[in-house]
Length: 323
Ligand code: AQP
Image (tube, rainbow, N blue to C red; front, side):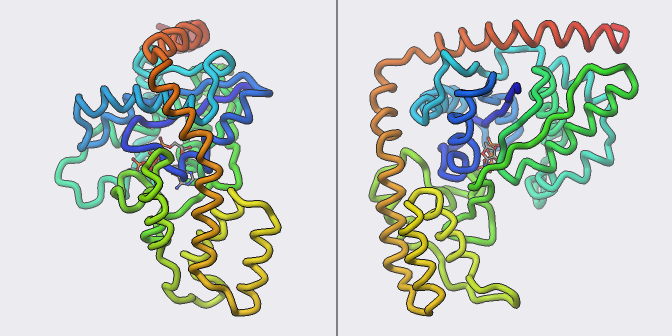
């Protein structure tokens, strides 16, 4: 099994990223060949991206990922822009991708809505993402639910390439974890997402009092729609608690909810404690790594290992298309 997954160096690493994807990455590196990529070219599609911020962000993200448990001696941890084969394959794949498919991508529609200037990078982002994955012939991709549509497109692109030029790429399967869809605490109808603004994300390395405040002020009662027995905000708090607390704690609160005596204040206090306990070792490790790790050296080593795979695959793809 070969695993590929990527993460953008934009904003802070949040509990949605961690519980939805990165925690799984850490487990997978024990049993599979894993490539984890800081996808800095993708970050350029954001109109808010600035050179200074991006320069600091990818360094910080490497330390964040290592603090979460990614081990560059086991997994290949590297930066997308250090491996030029990503953009080369993106071009080749863009020539087997339909304009209509890209125009249907939900993330493109959401991110371009209301924008005066919509860059082409945002539109072809899913092709670069397909290239990221296919360049390593990865067969599994651990992601959150928000990425399923892009992954389905990557499968379609692989199929179209293989059908036209011969079998080169496997069709990558998603690996969805239990935290695949963490919602914003401030607006539980929308995904926890950096681009929604800082009030919508709980950063793994945010100050403790900020984390406590965001949980304390989480929206709970927005009312029930028919068929719901729990409002989206409360369901999100339960989902988070399930991911960080022992089963008996969750069951006790569920019992209170069923009996109509759940106190949101108690549920939130428990979530605060268990979340901070889960994050404590990561936060401690992050402080140590900040002074002990040479990020450039880590990425240089990762890029060398990634390129060894990428060069062979791009050579194959070039030959197939007649270049
Ligand atoms: N809310 C979430 N719940 C579960 N998983 C999530 N992921 C992101 N948000 C959630 C997963 O995290 C991985 C890295 O994602 P990314 O680099 O694409 O980050 P993102 O999707 O860009 O994160 P944001 O916060 O949503 O950023 P913006 O707003 O810039 O798009 C992916 O596997 C993703 O599924």
